[in-house]
Length: 197
Image 1 (cartoon, one colour):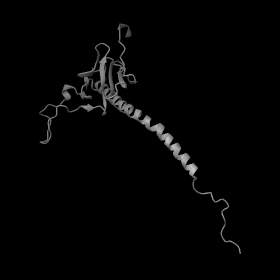
Image 2 (cartoon, helix red, strand yellow):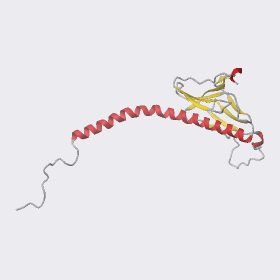
Image 3 (cartoon, one colour):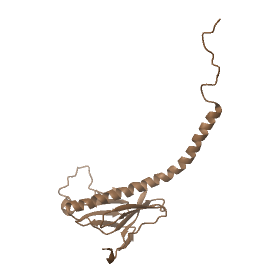
Image 4 (tube, one colour):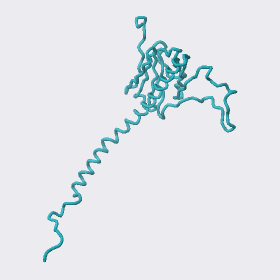
């Protein structure tokens, strides 16, 4: 009699052996062991990057608006409460008579403030002439041509002051860069003397 089916000469053609499974699981465990501890370092860096880029973008917008509208524009930083806001020119600000409030809405004097990312605070702000302050309110003022002094606004982590990101603003050119320090150092703008012009 002839057999109608074929016989598989190698019975081990499908599936994985126990040794192959152990090797694969060991490699996955090794990769997880390497990657997971480093994720903790990436998250604080991302928070600092986000806050510094937000400040830089708002400063760029205010400088641009001051040049377009040929008006003095300001940005105010509340170093104690980790927030900032744009201050409109007086003719663009609404008076209390022009603002319509709902009955349920409480009048909030703190409107317009933008909070920094959770866990991020200001490390300081200042310029080369006045120095750096760490408390109170600080203003960056652009004139009608979009010019200001060279200034620095620095942010750091609330629970780790060794990481400080500084937004460095070059007042005449309007160029801005973010300088990162993992030693907690705040960048200082270079003093400009008479020979610089």
